[in-house]
Length: 183
Length: 115
Image 1 (cartoon, rainbow over the protein chains, first blue to last red):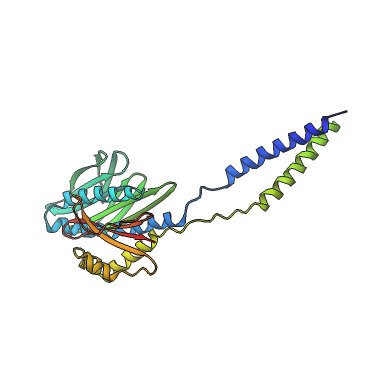
Image 2 (tube, rainbow over the protein chains, first blue to last red):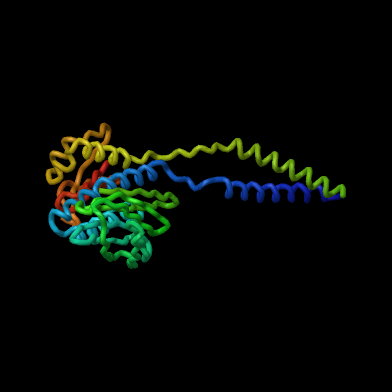
């Protein structure tokens, strides 16, 4: 009695199982509950709203640098409670004969930040979770271009105003959300 | 050659059979609702009304402003040093929503919701 037919059926089931398993792995995206995505949106909105308040509170207490550092580290801690990773890079300016720019790097690695004001370019190296500053001579109103972490932003600033800018990146599982705020 | 044709035939037959089985299996997942978004919506509403900042140090007043029908809830406000005011829930299966507030110092408002 020949048994070849049964071998073919078994082979076909094996081949089709492999085919469907591979297709399911390739086609099916990772399941991300909507609530997790919404949590990122709420946290991002919260930070975009509160960073300017934090900067103002820092100025009012003449401790803007320490206040912003504390705010960022505390926000990172609160984010971690909800399994959200927070990365941020911010800078603020103060004018006293020249424009002093203080940059805080709370991204995942050290950064070489490039500042360009009317062709006058300065590059500032900042270690992870630290702060560095530089000075530039500027007109009363000027465009400042900042380049970091594959991000480029051009901002219209006034030298007599306390300017604050923050870039924020939030991550939860495979969802990444970016936002920025200028105050 | 005949065997090879039979094998191709049976592969197609297998594909048809598997397709039928896959389409018959229900694909929708039943996800238990996550209530934390209700908390985030409430915290955002309080912020828009201006009461979150106004009553930051008065959790009783904050509680009066919160209305989440059908659920129990409580509020705590903590500073960066871990000093907290408000009530922690004495329950299991709690959803927590947090909102950071800067008001001369840095605080986190946590809204706990449970069934």
